[in-house]
Length: 306
Ligand SMILES: Nc1nc2c(ncn2[C@@H]2O[C@H](COP(=O)(O)OP(=O)(O)OP(=O)(O)O)[C@@H](O)[C@H]2O)c(=O)[nH]1
Ligand SMILES: [Mg+2]
Image (cartoon, rainbow, N blue to C red; front, side, top):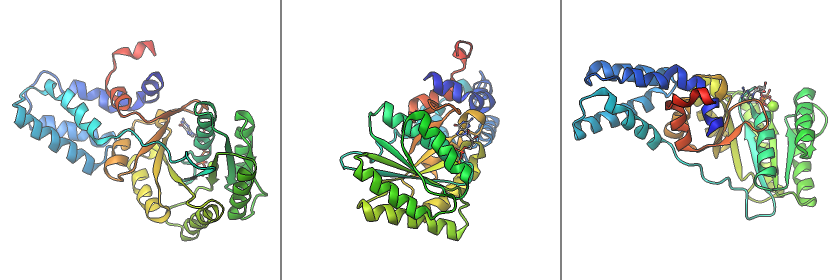
């Protein structure tokens, strides 16, 4: 909970925290709804999701005969929490080798999230984890992954810069099987969702892994940069069409006030959020917990103790 609260402090202080002020001891009127709508949209909850939340609240207000704005806060928390779900477990158990493919636009936080995830799976879940350096575009990308791998003691299978990512993935899959690794996480080069050739490449990488391990990749995790708010949601729709995304990691929520975008991952994209990136350290990846998330957006009293 501490990490959640600290990591989400920007979003809390900028927008959600202000809802308490807004919902002072006044009568509920048109201004209440206008102000709430503005705050939710500014927090990047997204237009459709905001409308949904306000509709739910208005229905409750008339059903329960609420008149005071300060009665609305609890109802708002519940309406927001109802949009979220506890993520299903990653589909990475019950078989010899499970493969997680990680995709996203340039700089969204893929490589860092992979290192954090590998670290979690290795240390918290006690799994044997290997990483494939499927981003062969830049030498620096391979080195970045190797540096993380050495730090967390997870082997990284790589090839020369410029080599075919499909070949790296093939080699890594074979190596993981031969050496008894249980989870292989594949890093990929950042790509824009409108670049046809690069999106095709993702399909190829998927197919290569599926040749060695039937049914692979078992998870396709899309890393969304939380600081880009609703833009990330638009990108995600394209990735969903092209690469069969199964779940989302939202990164960099510690550096943004746009944390409301997490609600629209669930309600607009209908995808589970598995993890949140809440900082640059290896430990700063938390399992998404709806209750902690919503609480961290509202409660401000304990801030001094953080
Ligand atoms: N504050 C903060 N920074 C993060 C987080 N996750 C990633 N970053 C930073 O974001 C930058 C980009 O991260 P990468 O992991 O290299 O992103 P990428 O998607 O692999 O980038 P490309 O491979 O170039 O497409 C780095 O400076 C990371 O340290 C996070 O949760 N919080
Ligand atoms: Mg990268």
